[in-house]
Length: 258
Image 1 (cartoon, helix red, strand yellow):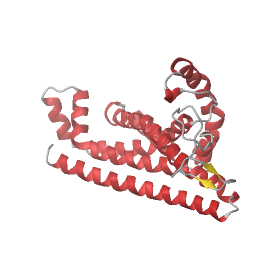
Image 2 (cartoon, rainbow, N blue to C red; image 1 turned 180 degrees about the horizontal axis):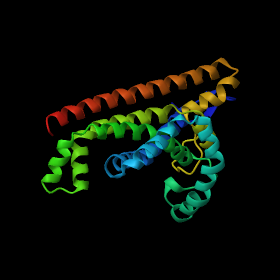
Image 3 (cartoon, rainbow, N blue to C red; image 1 turned 60 degrees about the vertical axis):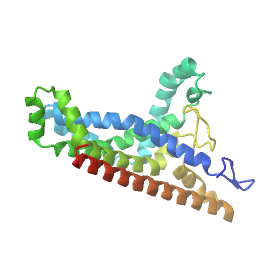
Image 4 (cartoon, rainbow, N blue to C red; image 1 turned 135 degrees about the vertical axis):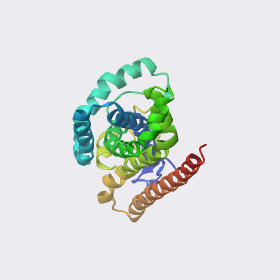
């Protein structure tokens, strides 16, 4: 697998697309998991009763928004805000670090990651809420009766009871991030290069298929796009298989009290 994608020269290296997909998905998880899990804890344990239903409804409503609407919002709102208020100041201060190096255009892997994080937060939040709701009240009261604070109760309960479920929610969000097409295509920049800087444009596997499939005139070009789709399928399959094995191990360890 090479990193040169040049249909004119019939050179079809899929590495830039694999790299862009993995990096944008990793950024999305890095942002979404703390926010989603923290929101689930707040809704279940701290929010007053009159606030729980509206907040939950608004969070779940985000999952119903079409991805193309997210993409349009990303182009006209998210990308300019990130470019002017985050990326340019960060590049000026930390431009010597490879991850923040280079000119700032706006469309970038960071923009794609942030947009993906907004899109997967409802999924992780909903599942995490359901997992937290299954914790027996007796366990919570037992920790509090032994002198534990509310935060200690949450930490202990989550550590012993909820981590496998939250991990499953994270994998669900990762699956959505890996396969997202339109929204990512509209903000990632669609540049088939492997660059360390998250401020630079990138590309994704789903985006490459969506952009070039109708324009693929040669058999080799068409076959390369089909192969990218196969790689995306295998990547998703391997991720889910590894997640299932890890989740099974975590559940077994939790049942033994380790």
